[in-house]
Length: 323
Image (cartoon, rainbow, N blue to C red; front, side, top):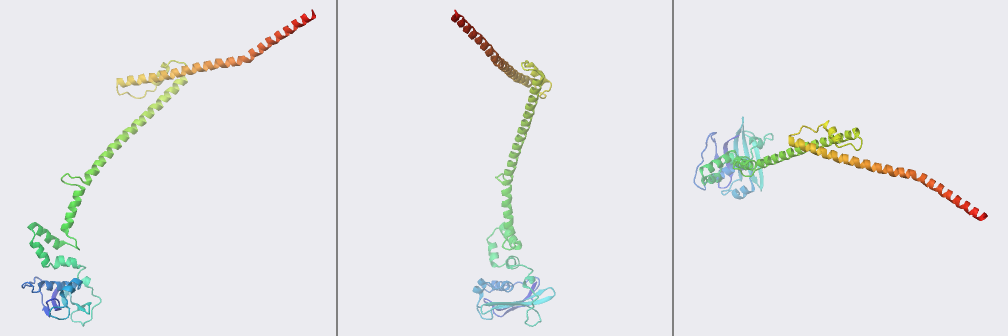
């Protein structure tokens, strides 16, 4: 869309102003302060995007009279259209009429389509830079002015690309600071190393547990074979020889082998002592059982002897009585 003509019936200080045959390249409008240059820019913005409450309060009613509003002639593709916008009785009215047609609006035309879906914020920052933005640039340094121009030229809806880049820098420093400050990525890496160390320690502990469990299982098997091969009371060397048939694993050195052998001998000696103690207890129990088994016979024999003695006493008494 290209603006070729404009007409202001009444807007601020302007009344009955017509500017036609505007160039499609560069148009320069100049004048002294308070001549109405900014008012002209605000009129173009108003016809395209509407009379906001701020504009109505500032520019209406027109200083020199006239119908509040005006029109723009624009070229869109192969068409030439007239955009009209007025305020009447407090109500805003607008229309899009193809040039040469009667005052009937074309319902098939859309102002949003003419503007290419560019909203007012983008239009003001990119296509209609005003005095306020220029005054802000005047007080900036070269680098700041370049950033501001970059923001005005490429900024989108209330978002400046310069601000976006600054936010990205802050987010990057928060994730990974270049100057060594605390950030998220180093903390995560440190946590990862700590967890890896813990996993290694847990793995070693697991392997140690499995090794000890296997050793205890092998020792239990050796003791079982020793008890089966040797009756109770056999010397502890029988247990040592039984364990020697199935070694516990290759020792790491002579000292460890000597300690393992001494430990096995101690365990075997304790086991043999327990076996001997159990054998003694079993022998004592057997002796007691034998005595208990012999007790009824002894009682019977004692009874027989006692009976014989009673008969002898009775016989002696009878003999004395007969005498």
